[in-house]
Amino acid sequence: MNYYVDMDETVLGGTSASSLEEWVDKIKSGHCTPLNLNLLRWLRDRKAEGHRLVIWTDRSPELEPATLRNLGKWAGLFDATSFNGDGVSGKIKYQVDGFVLDDKERYMKCGRRGAAQIVWKRRK
Image (cartoon, rainbow, N blue to C red):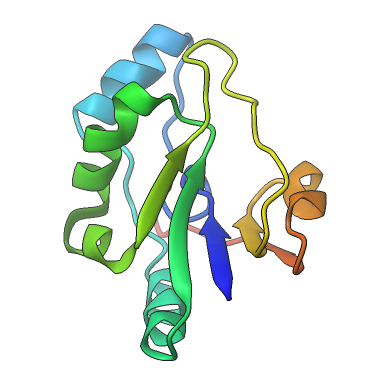
């Protein structure tokens, strides 16, 4: 099965910003920690079972290198990437043939094979 995995507030802790430009600058400088290690370990187990993992995010394609840096050693876990943002609003996700993991309820309908809403508490 394909697992489509969101980044912000699902795998990456995300970052707060007052504008899109500030948010992009923070991502590029690595301010998207902490990582959801419990989810990443679970995904590692799915990969070991032979499943395919895809980064599936609203981030624009220009943020792919920064996102992979944000993931650090975990970046190699993913088989493919899908950066669907337009660089302005970012909200361009679509239906996929797989299972979706995302923090936002509105994307639960995007997975043709199911979905799970990821909610986690970050340590301060």
